[in-house]
Length: 294
Image 1 (spheres, rainbow, N blue to C red):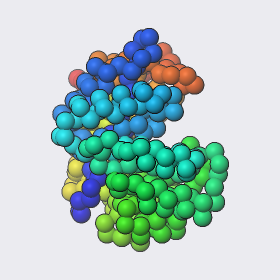
Image 2 (image 1 turned 30 degrees about the vertical axis):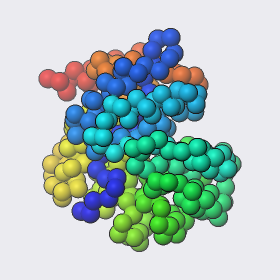
Image 3 (image 1 turned 135 degrees about the vertical axis):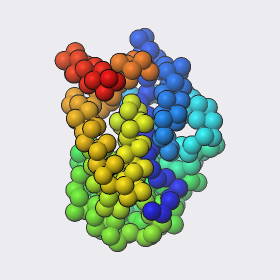
């Protein structure tokens, strides 16, 4: 399978918080080490899972600098740079992308519900100005606007747009993109539970939530999938499937933060309007974690 700039297992890192609500720098450093020491291929800073909308500009800079420092050039870092105000995104790009960032992840504009032409012009404007390659992010469950396969494929012709994180859950749409995309355009799964079938269909990898926690197994499943070792990949996929469902039972990142707390990596605190996982879910996650340790 062709290697792209971003392929294999990427992890959309959570932002750990201390009990007083401040960013927990030490735990974030520990989380980066945990993922990179257990097979993850690249890191994503300030994605949806990071609770970026609740972070101040100062906190965002702190998070990115901590991740870059912890990664220490061991693996590539992708940075979330998106929004529903095109000019504001362009202004952010104009202030500069931190040194060492290999690409940006930019989401379909949310809330505005743009037409396909608006989505296309938004991303073209960003790609024209971005100093690093752009990965599109289609997640209609959050944005209320789906980027169609036709729009994605037209954007794939732009020399600075190198891939898409597809979280539409629509396999017909995803297969159309994979079937007609340029060879150097990477389709990445945006849905942990669909990663195995998507790679079997031709996707290059995933940007994963689950890989914050059980990164060794998830990375192995992705590697097996990309190598055509379908039985090995399938076995790991089904071993993890129930755990993946639990992680999203009360939203993201509440579930994965609860599991990371059980694992002793960081606390489970979130910021409003998100709330922590319920005691019932934490108990289920603990039971699942312990059963998989035995």
